[in-house]
Length: 221
Image (cartoon, rainbow, N blue to C red; front, side, top):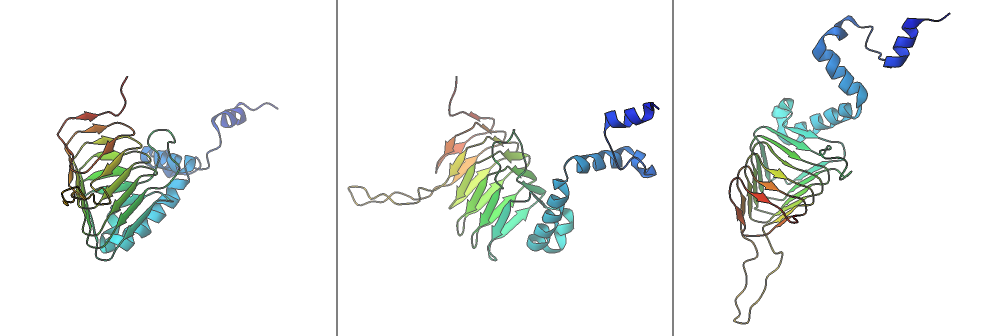
């Protein structure tokens, strides 16, 4: 015997939540569909819970950090991670440019200040040397496989878009001795203004200042 109802269920796909009355509420239905289609969200939520508990104590319930499984935060006891908003680590932003987790390392006496909602994409590595200071403004995101190495001071404004493969350094990592015996300055602050778009594979070196509303492109056609 042919049953139209059975055919309809098969065509739409099986959904185990249909039998519950409260599933008809739109917001709950939408949330459960997202979880059902991407079970990794549950593991990310649990992981973020424990990361927040470790680094933020009683403020963990606000979920100041959302950490993708595979991403890591390493922080010295004497370092400071201040999140005035929410910090996202890992995830996917543009296709699958990188499958690695994001990595944030704070050495002793260093300070990382997140001023709002900031996203560090997959494969992004942010390293702060002892005594360094990094500030990132609200609504700024850094996509896959970029590197920020801060030895002294790096400041990134709000509403910035930093594409994959970007490298930002405020240090040379070594000294150069000139003929007259003088030495170069190993590190100089880097300042990036508000609403700056940095294209893929750009390199920002020590002492650079980028004003507001700028577009930085390494290769143009």
